[in-house]
Image (cartoon, rainbow, N blue to C red):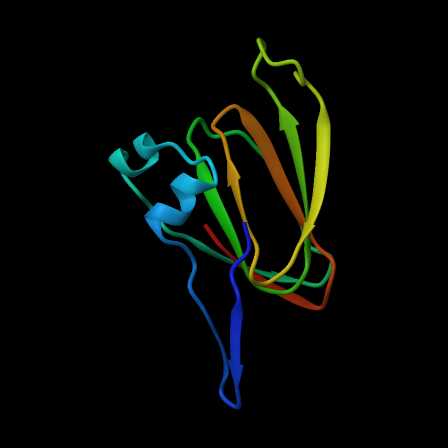
Length: 116
């Protein structure tokens, strides 16, 4: 999912997400019934954040920088079980991660910020 960046002389504004947009992109309505938590991760150059599979769904939004996100499908019944996938993400992009998918990130630039 991508969202437009609205730039001006002060920086930029980004609408992280709206419930209706997320549902349109396949996020289950059940996601909004759970306890929601929001985190910010600030990383320095070439930081690698380990693979995590924490048992809950995540919506990761890039605030600043370019990250390589890696995923491993850990759902045994899946046709992509144990398959490794990667995606380069930048500001304006969001990635929804199911609870059965391990995920990790590496910053590809000088500085980066993730919101999740």
